Image (cartoon, rainbow, N blue to C red; front, side, top):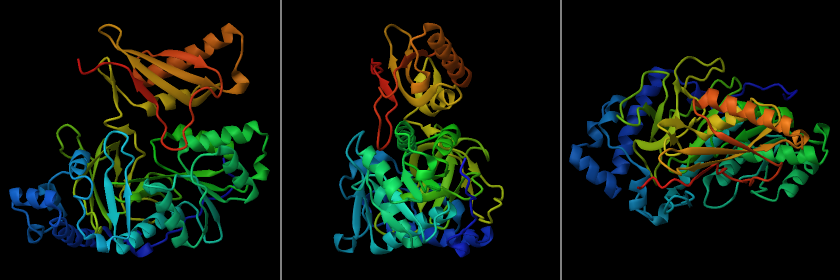
Length: 441
């Protein structure tokens, strides 16, 4: 654990600590404006006409439930710029999702959108220890992906300095961390763990690094992963949430209390719904996050189905912010594996591995269906110090892993132990599942 104290700082107290009754009126006003802006987009104009919705018909936040849902497929069908509500002359920047499962989805920003986005990122960065005298290494990719540029402008908004390292080239990343005396690191959690392993392998001592804080995003990660990275690097690590279709990073982030990520409710309405019935889940239960933007000009979006599964917390936070909080993302509903009728998420495998001494949270799940039943194999890397040619020790380690996975998932996975540094490392989002089943038959 880091020897540093987490300060309790608030970037925008007027917004982040706004009384909830006052915020409800603010949200209703901006929801009306969003509906009016969204009417400039053919998809919403058609949907509003079908439901007889106008901006004037929106009286309160409760009217949100009358509005149509938006899906990733809706955005793809409008490719490339069918969800833009402003002319090209008013755009300041265009980003896009990765497009790994289809065409990329484009999102545009006006200059005011950019200003808001920078402020939202500044909020969670300050909540996570960032001050103007720090130097921050951004190890996200700089390109169509929103993460690198979004965090970059948030850091500058706080007044801190940015070292835009981008992604990849681990040796250079470590050299920069050490030689430039970086205070704060920004990357994916899986890449941070990779950096920690290489740092340890090179014999670099903690005293050679000035790191105090880290902000991780871009992929789901567990509390066990946080403990592992903090222990390896001697830092405090903070979670944040965002997605390109909404704005990018800045939708929510942790404060010093780290009891969930504060949702920026003056800019986003977040619902937690049953992904099957699309009805609200009981307070505190897990559901799919559905998000409506309140202040976006270029690409307003209404009731976007994120497919991300989480919980919402409404109890007061000791930090003084009055916004609701969300749990870490358990996984995406479209990342969920159904194995012999049981729902399993990669984060559950990660949780199990981090409970077993001798394993690293580097793994790959392979699914096959040789007959009528699913078979699941987990390839797990061992830590270098645990790698042994003694069969008894290897069998014991494998059995311990198998028991933990079964305890968490309720399923038996075949466990294959592999040598250290043999599974692929990822500088961006980690790919954890290879599904070789022919489920279309």
